[in-house]
Image (tube, rainbow, N blue to C red; front, side, top):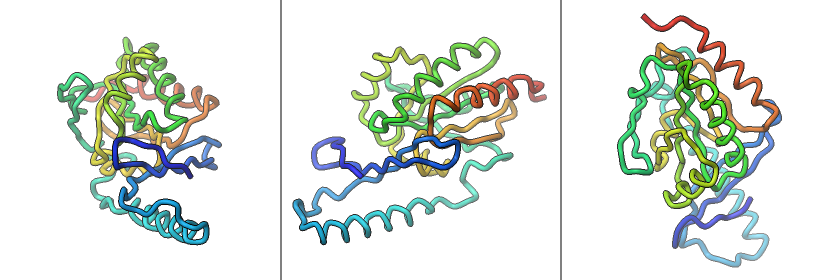
Length: 213
């Protein structure tokens, strides 16, 4: 557990976990209370962290099931601002196979996963693949720097946490696969380079499906 500054008076408590699913890494975080006392004795500090983590886990499940992204059901719609200040909606990619990835610059595995997704997008975009990267509770300048540094072509949108909550995201990176009919077919949380081939296989299967009538 470590605290990373986001902007003055705010920080995120980031929990970097090793997931059992495909042995991939993911990050989960919440905004910390800037008024919390600093320099707690270690005993009080342990109790504080335990209670904070318990509250965080409880808060993970606040999104009603009926609006979550559910496999086999229509992907929840959204419209978010990109780095140029323009609104981009999921509906803009109607009829395409879509990969929606939730990520953040403060999440170490995300800094590996997004360039891999971008590479996949470049390979399959002429066959009808679209991809959207949604930066969760991040700073636009930091996101823009990363996008320039890694030459990311995917539309990158800024989310204050509302869309990630609708999708039921608990840890990032989190990837949702949407077919041409707009249905969620798979989701994947966490990332290691060893899963790249499986991700590509899922995309190939969706691209091979007939277009929605």
